[in-house]
Length: 145
Image 1 (cartoon, helix red, strand yellow):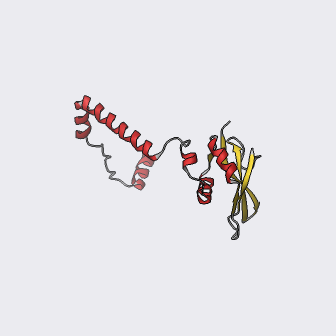
Image 2 (cartoon, rainbow, N blue to C red):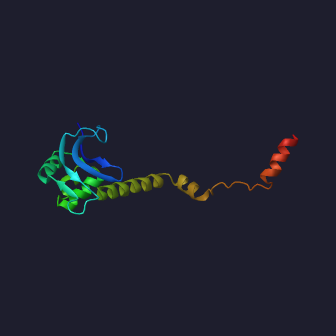
Image 3 (cartoon, helix red, strand yellow):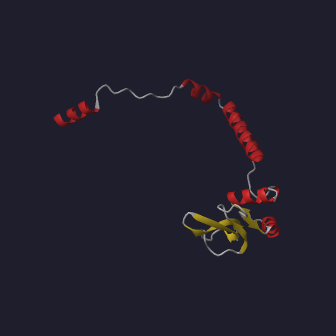
């Protein structure tokens, strides 16, 4: 079972508030949570967020992935992103390393086939011939035939 920490909407029109909960990843947006962690009220000035940080850390430690909004809320509440960053998959450094490796292998591939490299540089892109007649004239020509 893949578990996520996300928001579910409550409230009324133009006055939303959200429950922060742990959900099965296949549960619908306002479905039943595995565990309720707190709430987020974006319209409130006095207490916009209340969350049980110990339970949030527990769920992050067992592999729950926070949504983007919940990740921002957790960072603001003092939960370090390193607690769930290791479980995210591709980090920016890892992505850059993969891209560099891919470029290096492409250069090696081009070096093996010098004919392909020269042909790729020498061949210009095909350009479309400009039309000499207007669309109205073409329509009239087609009507005559």
